[in-house]
Image (tube, rainbow, N blue to C red; front, side):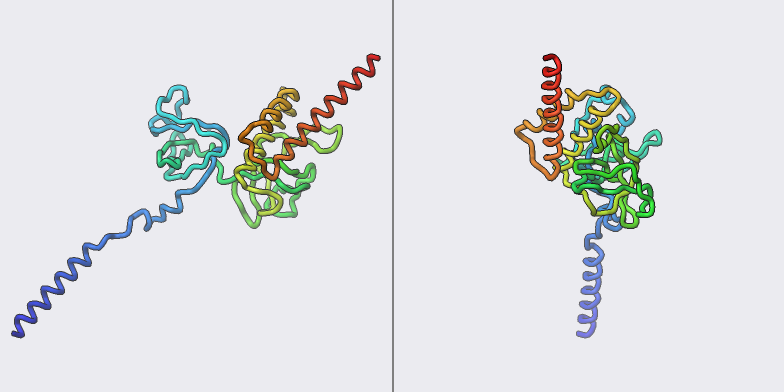
Amino acid sequence: MKKIVFLFLIVSLCMFSCKKGNEPVPEEKEAKGMDNIEKTQYLKWATWVFSNKDDLGKDAKDVKEKKLLEFGNKVEITDELKHNDKLYYQIKLPDESTYYVLASNLTEAFIIITDTNISTYSQPSEDYPITKYKLQPGDFAYFVKNQNGFISVEFISYLPNREKNKDATWPTSPAWLVEGVGYTTDTKAARDGYFLARTYNKMYGKAKDKDGAIKDMQDYLNDDGLVETDVTYVIRNLLNELTVTEVVNDVSDVNSVD
């Protein structure tokens, strides 16, 4: 009887050990922290993305399997790779489809100024102020990185000089802002900020086109899909300022003829 009990105990121990050895092992990606690599980013501008990594480096016109993404489209980064010394990301869209895109076409966040007279700095320290201008509502930049309570940003347009009879300014870029002060990262407001940046470039760039800027603003504000944000009023005020000035000038011209 003792022998039977002893054999039963041995068989039971073997069965328990085998079962324990077959338990599912945690996925390798969790052990390597793959979840930390998958970061949410946004398109800086309209960009073609490619389905196949063999097409990396080619002109979009020479690639068949591709998709056009628009400014502000959100993507998830699932992998990264180098091609001809350039960094590319594999990205995933909400429908789970994957593509490849040049990393420099993406940003982690948009920075849109919402308060008046926001200071910028040449270093992440208030001891290095940039004094030739202050940022105003609607001014737009791309987030680069944060450090020591500051964020580094990259501007993409002229800034109108708010003082009369002075030219527009191309801001120092990259520059630093105090983190969390005077701006929003809201993606809807980013559309307004991006539009304003393009408008400023049209107004103050080499080929100045004030009439074109006015037409663009009218179309933008009359769009049925327009979503009002904290900075939409900046576009409306700029349009009013330009059109009122234009009317006053026309009246002056008529009076001078008389």
